Image 1: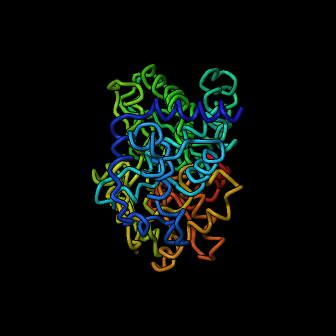
Image 2: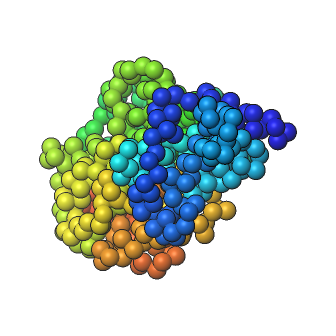
Image 3: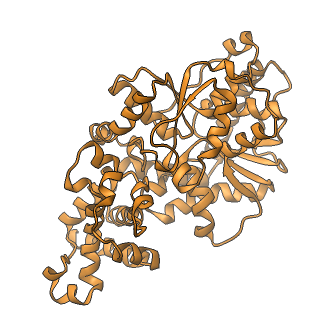
Amino acid sequence: MADKAVATALEVLEKQLNRPLATAIEVCARCGICAETCHYYVSEPKLEHVPAYRAEQLRKVYRSKHDFIGRFFPQWVSAQELDENMLERMAEMAFSQCTLCRRCTFNCPMGVDTPLMMRVIRGMATAAGKAPEILEMLADAAIEKGRDPSMFKGLFLEQIAEMEKELQAMVGDSSARITVERPGARVLYVALAGAHTILPPAAIFHAVQEDWTLSIYEAANYGVFLGDTARAKEIAKRIIDEAKQLKVQEVIVAECGHACASLVWDSPTWFGETFPFRMRSIVELFAEYVEQGRLKLDPSANPEPITYHDSCNLARTSGIYREPRTILKAVAQNFREMTPNGLENYCCGGGGGLVALPEYDERRMAAGRPKAEQIRRTGAKIVAAACENCRLQLGDLNNHYELNVEVTALADLIVKAMRLPKRQVETAPKATVPAVS
């Protein structure tokens, strides 16, 4: 069984060994600059927290198969044949000691894509049966929902009908609607699990009279965290097919970093096609509404000091870091930047699916210490983040490090600045936040 797992993992490596991966493996100069860029290393400086060291484990295996000297004199080039113990150590590193935040890549003088290598290790571990079980369960559950939507669609429509009443009370307009999979709508909005990702955007869409409809699927894609392209592609396919069938002009992804990166940036490569619709984050659409003057906003509605956490997948992967600030400057009276921020912002420590893995809670809290210190230095009372996983992690950091802040989404701040009638806002029940989106 052990030999089979190793052989399966090596098959995945060979299958994914393309030019970008080979380049990432070959060009590392061992300069060590990546160490100080990693939130794990900053929190706890030790060898296994250096990105280059983690990537070196894959390089050892690569050299044993693809380096001429490594095949015959492995000790000369630190080549090592993969065995089950080594595979388990590599899996542990890739899943619990790297959040795929890409900060090391952005600061590497050679541009070494260490997260790419970590994703390959994750894929190897997943194929060999050594991935965290909960990530596999979440990915498989999403796939099953796509295969037979009838199993849940009836209940989903009932829930949305009740949510529509909440929306009407919230905006003070009985004509407000939440349609589901309406053909010909301009926008298909793909939310996350929970009313908290549907109601605030619905109120904003109503205010600007957007022609929108709601997807029956969630935006989250846990196949990405597994490094399993086949699973990730199948999860994304549900939404791609839905958008094609409805003939929408845009697919708008909820405030979620990995969901945006996987659907907007990865899926065109997975499917090898140009889709007949545009795809982007809802943050970009909100910023567009603000710039076009389509929302009446009162920043005095948010007088508390507010700071913003840049999701790694939104800022570094998707280039979305100006748009949140366009929004915040319009809805907040006292916006304060973290240092560093934008492309250089530290990961919160919950990315890469780590926030869904309770067995790594202690490690996750330690890795989030640089982020907690950033927040504390701003003196902010509210931390906004345009990513569900980030908000869950920031909430845990808030409790663990006693930051005494409120964690919120951009949509919530926008709705507050819209100054909806006080009586109606109070009658709308608070949305519940699920443990995992």
